[in-house]
Structure formats: C-alpha cells, structure tokens
Length: 231
Image (cartoon, helix red, strand yellow):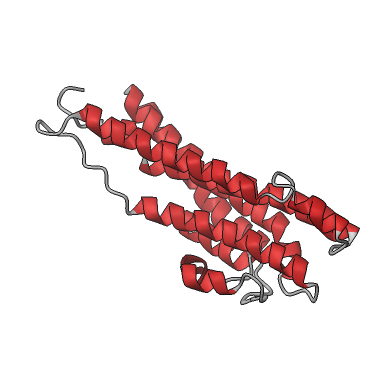
C-alpha cells in the first residue's frame, strides 16, 4: 500500500519519486520552482487503487484477529491497520495540498515560491525517514540476545522519531514567527499568507502521520519480541 501512497504523494507534490528520495536534488528546488508532474490525479489514484487495497488489508486483518486470538498477535495486526490508515490520511492531505503546491512552487513571487518548495522539502525528508526504517534492522532476541536490550534499542529509535517531529516545528511559519516578518515586509499577499499558514499545518500533519506509521510498522515490539523463548 505504501508504494502506491508514495506515488500519490510524490506526484501530488509535482515531483518524481526518484527526486523525493534524492536529498541533493531536493536541495536544488529550494528557490527554483521544479514541477515534474502537473496533472497527477491524486483522487484517481486513491479511489481506483489505494481504497481497494486498503479495504482488503482491513478485511484480512480483521479475519486474522478473529482466527488468532493471542494478544500480541492482535496488537501486531492493529499496528499494521493503524499504520496503513495513517498512510491513507497522508494521501488525503496531499490532495488538499496539491493545488497550492502546483500554483506557488512555480510562481513569479520568489518568496512564496521558496516557502512552498520548503514545504515539499519537509515532506521529502520524512518520506526518506520511512524508507530508512523499512530497511532498519533490529535483531530478534535469542538465547544470547537480551530482549531488554532490544527493547531499549526500539525505545531509542522511537524517541529519535519523536525528536524529528519536535524539530520540524521550527520550520512551521506560524510557530517560528517567520510569517509575521513576511507580513510586515509585505512580501506576500493576504491570500498567500493564509494559504501558507494552512498548508504548513497540513505538512505538519502529514509528517506526524508518516512518523507514527513508521513506528507502528518497523519499531513494533510485539513483532520483534514475539518469538523470544522467554515470552
């Protein structure tokens, strides 16, 4: 499901998936508008592809929980269902964000263009975090591997994810006060200001959901510790 969601996210932002995953390329779009996809239909991707797959995941998960009543198994399935729900919510947020991204990332006004390209960079950073944790390895505990140490490693990674979220607040134009200076300097129209404040909030929501999904899928103690002989 995430692969299709990623397609909707990248194309909805007017970018290719390769560009979003390339940190160097993302840096080059800071000030110069780069639109690689103008006509991505996020609605079509959602209704024709994502919605059906998500529905099948929910049905499969519900049946599995009914068949296997072990608490840790049920919790692990719940984590998968919740994570996929977060990915779906991200796509819905991208749909709301897309019109202004395409409008302002290539605008003549250099200030608004820079601010909206910064929003794309913020999302791309958290997309790369998801991919990092997809490949992240936590060794399952064995007779020679203390489960307490494994759990400690999981908690440290969860704390790191939370730190990413906390640090991202400083880039919110309302939170860091940047919007006030832009208004004082009269560098943005009233419409641009309102749009930027709202869209910065949407980006915060997107990134929180990406982090939560990553923690649920890839830092899940019920999965990692399930096979330990002492459990």
